[in-house]
Image (tube, rainbow, N blue to C red):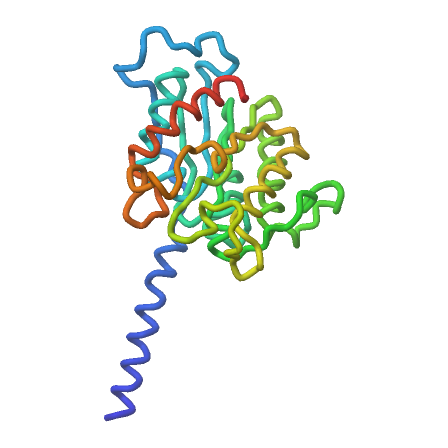
Length: 264
Protein backbone atom coordinates (compact mmCIF):
# COMPACT_ATOMS: atom_id res chain seq x y z
CA UNK A 1 0.00 0.00 0.00
CA UNK A 2 2.82 2.37 0.89
CA UNK A 3 4.49 1.63 -2.45
CA UNK A 4 1.21 2.37 -4.22
CA UNK A 5 0.80 5.70 -2.43
CA UNK A 6 4.44 6.58 -3.17
CA UNK A 7 3.97 5.82 -6.88
CA UNK A 8 0.83 7.95 -7.02
CA UNK A 9 2.70 10.81 -5.34
CA UNK A 10 5.52 10.61 -7.87
CA UNK A 11 3.06 10.62 -10.78
CA UNK A 12 1.27 13.61 -9.30
CA UNK A 13 4.55 15.53 -9.02
CA UNK A 14 5.45 14.72 -12.61
CA UNK A 15 2.01 15.84 -13.75
CA UNK A 16 2.38 19.17 -11.93
CA UNK A 17 5.82 19.73 -13.44
CA UNK A 18 4.85 18.75 -16.96
CA UNK A 19 1.77 20.95 -17.17
CA UNK A 20 3.69 24.26 -17.21
CA UNK A 21 6.15 22.83 -19.72
CA UNK A 22 3.33 21.72 -21.99
CA UNK A 23 1.67 25.12 -21.67
CA UNK A 24 4.92 26.82 -22.60
CA UNK A 25 5.50 24.48 -25.55
CA UNK A 26 2.11 25.45 -26.96
CA UNK A 27 2.84 29.18 -26.82
CA UNK A 28 3.28 30.43 -30.36
CA UNK A 29 3.10 33.71 -32.19
CA UNK A 30 -0.48 34.80 -32.75
CA UNK A 31 -0.34 37.88 -34.97
CA UNK A 32 -4.10 37.85 -35.56
CA UNK A 33 -4.61 38.55 -31.86
CA UNK A 34 -2.21 41.49 -31.92
CA UNK A 35 -3.27 43.54 -34.92
CA UNK A 36 -3.52 47.29 -34.44
CA UNK A 37 -4.76 49.82 -36.99
CA UNK A 38 -5.27 53.60 -36.80
CA UNK A 39 -8.11 54.58 -34.48
CA UNK A 40 -10.95 56.98 -35.18
CA UNK A 41 -9.21 59.42 -32.83
CA UNK A 42 -5.98 59.66 -34.80
CA UNK A 43 -4.79 63.22 -35.53
CA UNK A 44 -6.12 64.68 -38.77
CA UNK A 45 -2.69 66.12 -39.56
CA UNK A 46 0.19 63.98 -38.33
CA UNK A 47 3.64 65.57 -38.06
CA UNK A 48 4.97 62.47 -39.81
CA UNK A 49 3.01 62.74 -43.04
CA UNK A 50 5.51 62.53 -45.87
CA UNK A 51 8.05 60.63 -43.79
CA UNK A 52 9.62 57.47 -45.17
CA UNK A 53 7.52 55.02 -43.18
CA UNK A 54 4.20 56.86 -43.03
CA UNK A 55 1.33 54.59 -44.06
CA UNK A 56 3.44 51.44 -43.93
CA UNK A 57 2.93 48.00 -42.35
CA UNK A 58 5.00 47.17 -39.27
CA UNK A 59 5.78 43.74 -37.77
CA UNK A 60 7.15 43.44 -34.23
CA UNK A 61 9.15 40.56 -32.76
CA UNK A 62 10.07 40.13 -29.11
CA UNK A 63 9.20 38.85 -25.67
CA UNK A 64 6.53 39.92 -23.22
CA UNK A 65 7.54 43.58 -23.28
CA UNK A 66 6.64 43.65 -26.97
CA UNK A 67 3.35 41.78 -26.71
CA UNK A 68 1.76 42.34 -23.28
CA UNK A 69 -1.62 44.07 -23.47
CA UNK A 70 -0.05 47.18 -21.92
CA UNK A 71 2.24 47.49 -24.96
CA UNK A 72 -0.80 48.23 -27.13
CA UNK A 73 -0.78 51.74 -25.64
CA UNK A 74 2.51 52.42 -27.43
CA UNK A 75 1.63 50.61 -30.63
CA UNK A 76 -1.64 52.49 -30.92
CA UNK A 77 0.40 55.70 -30.82
CA UNK A 78 2.51 54.38 -33.71
CA UNK A 79 -0.57 53.41 -35.69
CA UNK A 80 -2.26 56.77 -35.17
CA UNK A 81 0.76 58.99 -35.79
CA UNK A 82 2.14 56.95 -38.71
CA UNK A 83 -1.18 55.80 -40.20
CA UNK A 84 0.33 52.33 -39.85
CA UNK A 85 -0.81 48.74 -39.51
CA UNK A 86 1.05 47.12 -36.60
CA UNK A 87 1.20 43.33 -36.16
CA UNK A 88 3.02 41.66 -33.26
CA UNK A 89 4.59 38.20 -33.42
CA UNK A 90 6.10 38.45 -29.93
CA UNK A 91 5.68 35.73 -27.31
CA UNK A 92 6.20 36.04 -23.57
CA UNK A 93 9.50 34.53 -22.43
CA UNK A 94 11.11 34.72 -25.87
CA UNK A 95 14.69 35.76 -26.46
CA UNK A 96 17.09 35.88 -29.37
CA UNK A 97 18.83 32.66 -28.35
CA UNK A 98 17.28 29.62 -30.01
CA UNK A 99 17.08 28.12 -26.51
CA UNK A 100 15.07 30.97 -25.00
CA UNK A 101 11.34 30.24 -25.26
CA UNK A 102 9.57 30.67 -28.59
CA UNK A 103 12.60 32.62 -29.76
CA UNK A 104 12.68 35.55 -32.13
CA UNK A 105 14.31 33.16 -34.58
CA UNK A 106 11.08 31.12 -34.68
CA UNK A 107 8.98 34.28 -34.80
CA UNK A 108 10.88 35.62 -37.81
CA UNK A 109 10.64 32.28 -39.60
CA UNK A 110 6.84 32.37 -39.41
CA UNK A 111 6.36 36.04 -40.27
CA UNK A 112 4.83 37.43 -43.42
CA UNK A 113 6.11 40.23 -45.63
CA UNK A 114 5.91 43.75 -44.16
CA UNK A 115 7.38 47.15 -44.94
CA UNK A 116 9.06 47.58 -41.55
CA UNK A 117 10.39 44.95 -39.14
CA UNK A 118 11.10 45.79 -35.48
CA UNK A 119 13.28 43.52 -33.34
CA UNK A 120 12.48 44.36 -29.71
CA UNK A 121 14.32 42.31 -27.08
CA UNK A 122 15.71 40.89 -24.92
CA UNK A 123 15.56 40.89 -21.16
CA UNK A 124 14.92 37.16 -21.34
CA UNK A 125 18.33 36.23 -22.74
CA UNK A 126 19.93 37.90 -19.72
CA UNK A 127 17.45 36.44 -17.22
CA UNK A 128 17.66 33.00 -18.80
CA UNK A 129 21.45 33.00 -18.70
CA UNK A 130 21.86 32.63 -22.45
CA UNK A 131 25.37 33.58 -23.64
CA UNK A 132 25.80 37.12 -24.94
CA UNK A 133 28.08 35.95 -27.74
CA UNK A 134 29.92 38.29 -30.11
CA UNK A 135 28.78 40.54 -32.92
CA UNK A 136 30.24 38.15 -35.53
CA UNK A 137 28.22 35.10 -34.35
CA UNK A 138 26.31 33.50 -37.22
CA UNK A 139 27.67 35.81 -39.91
CA UNK A 140 29.73 35.27 -43.06
CA UNK A 141 32.77 35.74 -40.83
CA UNK A 142 32.19 32.37 -39.12
CA UNK A 143 30.52 30.68 -42.09
CA UNK A 144 27.08 31.04 -40.48
CA UNK A 145 28.04 28.67 -37.72
CA UNK A 146 24.72 27.29 -36.44
CA UNK A 147 26.25 26.40 -33.09
CA UNK A 148 26.27 30.16 -32.39
CA UNK A 149 22.49 30.40 -32.60
CA UNK A 150 22.38 29.72 -28.85
CA UNK A 151 23.84 33.17 -28.15
CA UNK A 152 21.99 36.47 -28.12
CA UNK A 153 24.23 37.81 -30.89
CA UNK A 154 23.82 34.71 -33.03
CA UNK A 155 20.06 35.06 -32.73
CA UNK A 156 20.11 38.74 -33.64
CA UNK A 157 22.22 38.09 -36.72
CA UNK A 158 19.99 35.18 -37.72
CA UNK A 159 16.89 37.37 -37.51
CA UNK A 160 18.40 40.16 -39.56
CA UNK A 161 19.62 37.75 -42.24
CA UNK A 162 16.24 36.01 -42.49
CA UNK A 163 14.31 39.28 -42.64
CA UNK A 164 16.59 40.53 -45.43
CA UNK A 165 15.81 37.35 -47.35
CA UNK A 166 12.09 37.64 -46.63
CA UNK A 167 11.85 41.22 -47.96
CA UNK A 168 15.13 42.77 -49.17
CA UNK A 169 13.45 46.17 -49.52
CA UNK A 170 12.09 46.26 -45.96
CA UNK A 171 13.37 48.55 -43.24
CA UNK A 172 14.73 46.68 -40.20
CA UNK A 173 14.92 48.52 -36.89
CA UNK A 174 16.06 47.48 -33.44
CA UNK A 175 14.69 48.54 -30.06
CA UNK A 176 17.15 47.72 -27.27
CA UNK A 177 16.02 46.23 -24.02
CA UNK A 178 14.10 48.49 -21.66
CA UNK A 179 15.16 48.91 -18.05
CA UNK A 180 13.77 46.78 -15.26
CA UNK A 181 13.95 47.27 -11.52
CA UNK A 182 13.72 43.84 -9.91
CA UNK A 183 17.53 43.72 -9.71
CA UNK A 184 20.31 46.30 -9.85
CA UNK A 185 21.78 45.25 -13.20
CA UNK A 186 18.41 45.81 -14.87
CA UNK A 187 18.70 49.58 -14.67
CA UNK A 188 22.24 50.43 -13.55
CA UNK A 189 24.73 50.34 -16.46
CA UNK A 190 27.61 50.38 -13.97
CA UNK A 191 26.31 47.51 -11.86
CA UNK A 192 28.50 44.62 -10.75
CA UNK A 193 25.37 42.43 -10.71
CA UNK A 194 25.86 39.64 -13.25
CA UNK A 195 23.96 36.54 -14.40
CA UNK A 196 25.21 32.96 -14.44
CA UNK A 197 27.27 33.59 -17.60
CA UNK A 198 29.22 36.36 -15.85
CA UNK A 199 27.63 39.17 -17.90
CA UNK A 200 25.70 42.22 -16.76
CA UNK A 201 22.48 43.42 -18.37
CA UNK A 202 24.43 46.36 -19.83
CA UNK A 203 26.68 43.83 -21.61
CA UNK A 204 23.62 42.43 -23.39
CA UNK A 205 22.45 45.88 -24.44
CA UNK A 206 25.92 46.82 -25.71
CA UNK A 207 26.09 43.60 -27.72
CA UNK A 208 22.70 44.32 -29.28
CA UNK A 209 24.03 47.65 -30.55
CA UNK A 210 27.27 46.08 -31.83
CA UNK A 211 25.38 43.48 -33.88
CA UNK A 212 23.20 46.15 -35.44
CA UNK A 213 26.22 48.31 -36.25
CA UNK A 214 27.69 45.41 -38.24
CA UNK A 215 24.53 45.17 -40.34
CA UNK A 216 23.82 48.89 -40.59
CA UNK A 217 20.52 48.45 -38.75
CA UNK A 218 19.21 51.57 -37.03
CA UNK A 219 18.91 51.28 -33.24
CA UNK A 220 16.66 53.01 -30.74
CA UNK A 221 18.66 52.73 -27.51
CA UNK A 222 15.69 52.59 -25.16
CA UNK A 223 17.85 51.58 -22.19
CA UNK A 224 19.71 54.91 -22.37
CA UNK A 225 16.86 57.28 -23.24
CA UNK A 226 13.89 55.78 -21.42
CA UNK A 227 13.83 58.53 -18.81
CA UNK A 228 12.96 56.13 -16.00
CA UNK A 229 15.15 55.40 -12.97
CA UNK A 230 14.93 54.37 -9.31
CA UNK A 231 13.30 57.70 -8.46
CA UNK A 232 10.21 57.37 -10.66
CA UNK A 233 9.84 53.80 -11.91
CA UNK A 234 6.81 53.18 -9.66
CA UNK A 235 4.82 55.45 -11.97
CA UNK A 236 5.57 53.42 -15.06
CA UNK A 237 6.02 49.78 -13.99
CA UNK A 238 3.79 46.99 -12.80
CA UNK A 239 4.34 45.68 -9.23
CA UNK A 240 6.74 43.03 -10.55
CA UNK A 241 9.15 45.89 -11.42
CA UNK A 242 9.93 44.06 -14.66
CA UNK A 243 7.10 44.93 -17.02
CA UNK A 244 5.89 48.42 -17.80
CA UNK A 245 2.32 49.50 -17.20
CA UNK A 246 0.25 51.38 -19.78
CA UNK A 247 1.61 54.73 -18.58
CA UNK A 248 5.14 53.50 -19.20
CA UNK A 249 4.24 52.58 -22.77
CA UNK A 250 2.47 55.89 -23.31
CA UNK A 251 5.69 57.56 -22.17
CA UNK A 252 7.95 55.71 -24.62
CA UNK A 253 5.41 55.38 -27.46
CA UNK A 254 5.88 58.86 -28.99
CA UNK A 255 9.67 58.38 -28.91
CA UNK A 256 9.29 55.08 -30.73
CA UNK A 257 6.91 56.62 -33.29
CA UNK A 258 9.34 59.46 -34.02
CA UNK A 259 12.12 56.91 -34.57
CA UNK A 260 9.98 54.67 -36.75
CA UNK A 261 8.95 57.57 -38.97
CA UNK A 262 12.37 57.76 -40.61
CA UNK A 263 14.58 55.25 -38.81
CA UNK A 264 16.55 57.76 -36.77
